[in-house]
Image (cartoon, rainbow, N blue to C red; front, side):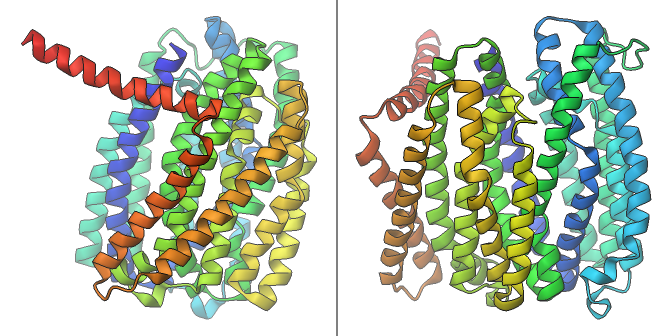
Amino acid sequence: MRVENSIKNIISSLCSNIVTSLLGFISRTIFIYTLGKSYLGISALLQNVFGLLAISELGISTAIGFSLYKPLAENNNKLISTLMTIYKKAYRIIAITILFLGIILYNYLDFFVNPNQQPKEIFYIYFLYLINIVIGYFLSYKTTLISSDQKAYKLVPIQIKLNIVTILIQILYLLIFKDYLGYLTIQILSSILINVIQNRFITKEYNYLNFSSKDKLPTEEKRIIIKNMFGLMAAKLGDFCVNSTDNLIISKFVDLASVAIYSNYIMIRNLVNGYIGILFGAITSSFGNLVAEGNEKKSLELFNTLFFLSFMLYSFEAVSFLCLFNPFIGDLWIGKEYLFSMNIVLAIVINNYLTGLRMPIITMKSAAGIYAEDAWVPFGFAIMNLGASIVLGKYWGVFGVIVGSIIGSICTADWFRPIVVFKKVFKVSYWNYFKNYFKYIILGFAYMFISVEICNIISISNIFINFILRCFVCVFVPNTITILLFFKTPEFKYLYNVFSNMFLSKIVSKFRRKENV
């Protein structure tokens, strides 16, 4: 059942992402052509500003989600009801807190964006964003329950239908009115509708639960949640400082136009990472159950396989980004005025690759409920990242801001979190992890160097043929070398067997159906 639910979550999430990302990409293209850099920049900036406010969530969602694994497995409906009631009350308090902080923060918006660069409707734009995030906290708490129960795939049909309708309406609105305020209003109304429908579905699905329970949480459960929350609060702060401050610093020390350009690269990066994230997200619950069983050897074997898989996926992604980012954006999409120089592109790619290699550790850390043991890491990460990004950003602009993020990760999370996970979960030496880590880094950089050199040789005047040839290089170089180097390893054999069995079983079932016709 664990594997079956994970596969269902992966497939349903992939289907949802393919449809919504395609339409979202079309919507963004129309957004750029109808509204321009100014609105694109302010949109990206405000998303980061409200990311700062979201820190007040304090990791409650993840802490409650982890606490739900055991009672869901044991069908302890009383404890589930108590946890969900506390979760609902906590999110209402958070929503009110964010509303209050958001009103105060508006008075300091000029610090991040030069008033001369702000759209004339900035007041309305800002508070539409604020309303959207506040309402979300009031309505979204129940989704943690169905996610922890590994049944999030049941929400996908609702999300696909409403997201398609929303994006189509937004596209039509932009083409007719070219108005950002109406565009945001449509988004808010859609978010409210999706949350309301999902809540009704979850309430019906779990009609045996009481979401307004008056029972008190057991002391031990309360202690675990509070302990995890402190670690998660630090993690959320660190995550914000790493992933959500770049636009703020770029806006402050460079300009809003650079924020707009940077947001396009990050949008494409996040789009691709979203598909990889589905894989890791879908198996986190399965890892949680496996860790709970106490089988350290099996957990370590699966971790090593997941680490190798992350290397395969993210090295292929890094090569593709480095070779295709600028040709795609400049030649095929929105024009050369939206391009960064190759040194900035390289920094974006390296930062993303290092983040990708951390995914297995983050997945295992979340699954095992290790939140307090490395609480200092996010603060160290945040301090190093902000300090380096601000200093280097003053002298090197966007390139310096991204290099600051790389320095922060190398000096903190990249070395300490693996030590914690290997000691607490696997109870073995962490040296083999670091051997693999540095091996994967060296190979990833080698793949990038070889692929770029080959692509530089390609000189075809037709931009479409040129792009297709580059795509072929990106597919062939990293994957061929990886197969040649690792085809005899246990991790490669395991993945090969998993995927071959999946495809072979489908082929066999098709032939059987034909024979029965």
